[in-house]
Each structure stands twice: as C-alpha cells, then as structure tokens.
Length: 75
Image (cartoon, rainbow, N blue to C red; front, side, top):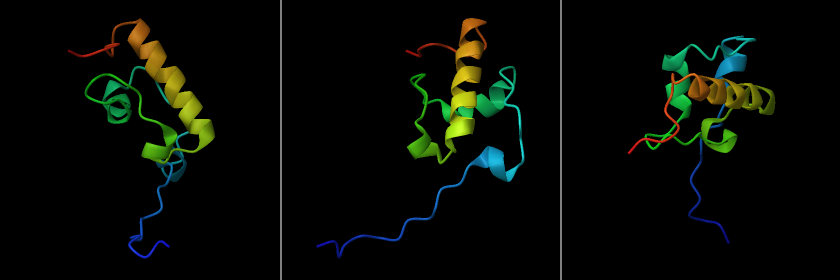
C-alpha cells in the first residue's frame, strides 16, 4: 500500500514551453543545466524533457564536448 506517497509536480519540457525548435550546441550556458557536476548528461526522466528534445539535447551536448566547449568528465 502506498499511503506515504507525496504529490509530485508534473515535469515539463522546457524547450516545448519556450517554443525552442533548435538546441544550439554553442549555447553552453543552457547545456550546463542538463549536465551534472561530474560531466554526465541528465536523463529525460530527471529533466522532464520530451523524447524529441532529449535527443536533440544529447546531440548538442556531444557536439559541444567534441569541440571542447563542455568537458567529457570533471575531476
């Protein structure tokens, strides 16, 4: 029985709400919100992004890493 369960606010896709159709890999300030302090990408379950924007976000983070705008890992 799940009596101790609290109400959790529904997560929403930030990119759908702001009507952003393209996630730019050069926008490091935005991309840092979706990467942990260790350099790992956050899952869509954690961020609340829809599947379409999560795929675009992943692609943008990987591109930013390859041209050294974001680190692969942080020590």
